[in-house]
Image 1: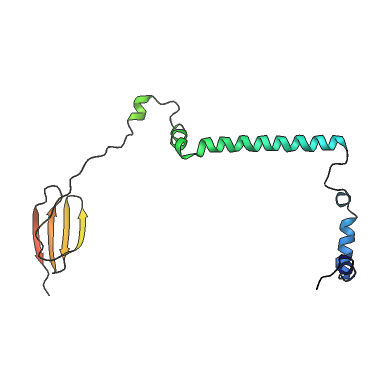
Image 2 (image 1 turned 60 degrees about the horizontal axis):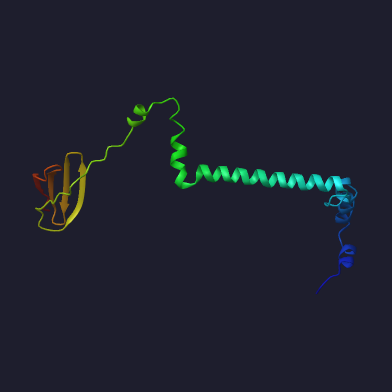
Length: 147
């Protein structure tokens, strides 16, 4: 069931009609959003173009700063002001190569592996604990936890 706009206006609640009349009497509500003369049109166009140019400029700056391929270079320049190249080289990470150790000795499948610096402790499903040296792979202690 469609209602015509004139019928809808007549069937409004009295408070709604009063509020609509108050709003329509405001000076800003009586004027259309379109510019009224040539000066307003020129100012509107200039303001729109200035906003567009400024928005594009900020987006380009953000892209240049936050883009993943440039981010590391931009971020690293934050703390390098006043430092020499020798001071910057002092903070390099040292990565060492490691070779996996083959620890053999359990009779059943290994259930748990725990490491604490120079020692590695393993436990198997049979209840056996073994303490290993993490550098050489040598077994130091065997503890049998039979129930």
